[in-house]
Image (tube, rainbow, N blue to C red):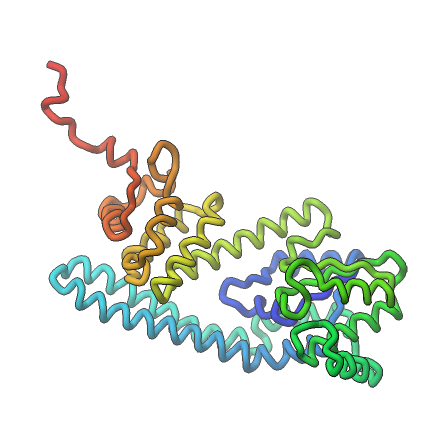
Length: 355
């Protein structure tokens, strides 16, 4: 049998704006469970963490992030009014975009409350469906006692949280009782402090093998699960890559400082090959309207690379961009590249006519 464990913070993506835990991923897990290809393990500690965090910690963090974006956009509008007060046309255009962005974030505030707090929301229904299919591992006195001893002795998991010890003891106890020889466990988590940075913690690998004969692999994302079929893996990988790209574009657009603008621009390069025309338009619009981007020392080189196509011309997605918008982008962000459409539209000089 193949088992899968998904750490608590991975479930948070069910509630995020971009739904990192997408319908496609959830449907694939449903399919694999129904075909008896995998069993989803859900220690009581993880269930408790998700249940409490979605109503308070995650919810408050999402609300705070959204409010900070509104505050940043409002401050940005005030700066633009001072900077462009002698250019009313340009100022009016930028103000409209910022006002629309503020309106979208205010709308998002309401959506956050619905996603997290309404038990009938799509996110909560997806979570309920996953939990209903999972093998819930109750916390017995033996598990609690073993976890407490592990914590006191400072044995891995290394994040020094009793909750992590409870999770591990629950998984080991369940597999020792139920797993057949040569079974495998896919452990999906991003908490390197607890479970290991360069692969799964060797101490825990050895312990699991000795007590259960089950092999283990660590994955930071679902698309890396080696036990899925090739087609299923590829489909998941495309889905997650698209979601990661969308998150990278969103982070760049909402860059709140010169440094984060550079960091976010650098991150975009990873997804250059799958950026769409719409993505480039968002990037250009943000590079014109967000002063943290166009005044940053850290973005020009990355933006030039991001826009570079063949023969020092831009990527094809930028050829149809509005001419005024393109010129503003070039000027504000020190873009050194050319567009073929601009050269083709230049008037022919009299001295170039051969008669």
